[in-house]
Image (cartoon, rainbow over all chains, first blue to last red; front, top):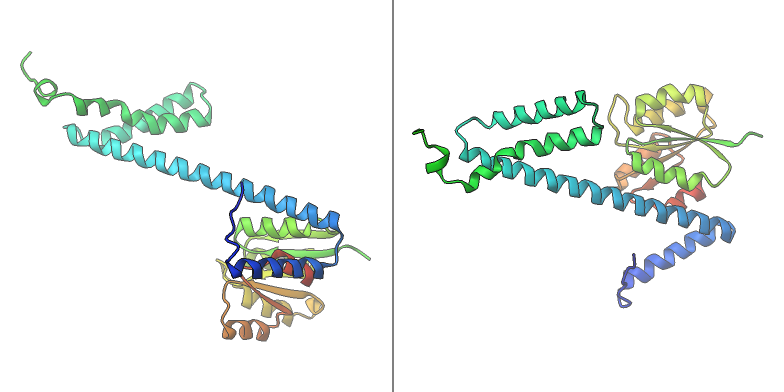
Amino acid sequence: MSTIYNPLDISIWKSQNDLFTEIVSLKRDNAFITKLFNRYSDYLQQLCLAHQKTNQSLSRSDSFARLQKAAAYKDDDTAVHVTRIAHFSQLVAKSLGMDDEFCKLINLASPMHDVGKIGIPDSILKNQVL
Amino acid sequence: MHAKRILIVDDNKELRALIRMTLELSDYDLFEAQDGDDAMKMIPVVKPDVIILDIMMPGQFDGLELCRKIKSNIANSATKVILLSAMSQKADIDQGYQAGADVYITKPFSPLDLLSHV
């Protein structure tokens, strides 16, 4: 990760100067300061990763929710049907001894099982004549 | 002499982690409380030398109330209280010192600054 500073931005000069003053006023040796800053940079990286992961999973569940809604419009059944399927699939997965990650995933993914209906014409889907 | 005992009181987990990693490199005994109620229970047991205290926290006591309680108890009279708060108006800072705080640091803060006050 690299940051591009605008050298004309005086606020950065100032903040770097402040930081320098703070470091000097700590009266600690170089090894201490280096260790401390390495810790900060590790932690920052950790926080960034966690943030990225949350954002990814948020946007994923958001897409799932929208797809589900689209499928529900096509279906005569109530939208609660897919919610039921989500819970049942999770329960079945759990009783089969699947791990937590899988159970969570199937809870998210199973409501997608009817999304394909969007592409099928009503004349076929709603054909009563057999 | 025993190592300085420091109690970190903040409801924000990430902030507690930041303070912990700042102070951990020096020889301090660190303790954490996640709100005022938690801190009230810990203080008589831990007997901290320094308390780093957030002001706005969930629960029965906020940081100011807690600071008053600490400072009014003779058992804690030697305890140093560092208030750490996002409230940065002069009136807020005055209120902090009136509550008995030894140091008032406004957020966003430099952890190095905190290190020099402990």
